[in-house]
Length: 455
Image (cartoon, rainbow, N blue to C red; front, side):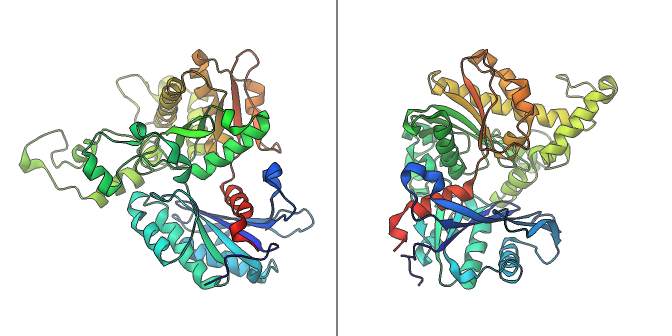
């Protein structure tokens, strides 16, 4: 068992296993740091990102944070990488052989774990907590399994480091019972833990802290509607610095659609989707058994804008939609209520409009849930941070709520240094912000500030 109370100058490795990627940041702890300068308690040393794990060949990126270290790799093909465990092994080999950093200097490894069930605080990974995370894998099939495979690799590769799990669900422990509960048998719900957990919690925690610093107001005084928009997407209503409601539920599947997720659907849809008759019928001769794993595969992996437009890349959806708009819209097909053009060139606009529509539905609902007392609308996540088109469409729909966009600011943040950007119009009373989230930094900060982990 590694020594949990590590030397104060030890390094912190933060690992973020996504559905098809592994993001890695190595930090050093600034011993002189204090809670008055939370962002300065750790300093990044290097970054790495391994992508395309679900659609090989994988792509490897590596760079040092300091301008004094010139070693940098940009999206190099990594043919021997085929899953999260091999991606982590590839990174460690590169760290040893090319970067010249001794892996034994890593004293804590922070793992982002999507579903923590009733774990409300970070936990040291031992046999008990590992097993608990394993039992929750069915509730987050795209993530928990990936995190566990990296954890298992860590145990072998870094035997002297302590492994700590940070849960996306922890941030949402403040959601009131009546919001977190489902209208089902309460005994069954309690016994099986069937309730809204919420996800993207590490991201929301980081965003809350960053926006608090940007607005120069304590987090406990802020009411925000935050959108984490990426291949997995969610919205969160934050009241007085705590999660009040969020769009994801028991699993990350509910709420907004994503790259391959359906988002919220009528619960009976899956039975009609798989019906032998190909239409709605209650004839038992035409029905078929639908197993949970089959339903999960369809709704988690065969849906979203990949199903609508044929690609999980939302950037491609936007570019193709704009290209069609620039050409002959009439020839491309009519996007009216008769649904013509679904499988033609209008599929790009359908995927875009559907995503924006679902986002706006949650923005409106959370505006009401917060009683109209909203300090800012915040965009984050890969799409939220990069897509000026999505931000424009959402804010345009929310002008009736007092939000407005500065067009120049909205299109001008790409490539700019910084974390939080104002893109709201001065003509409107409420603020609109973009925040570049950083889940690895959030874990490292929490780890560095926890005195129990250090000598």
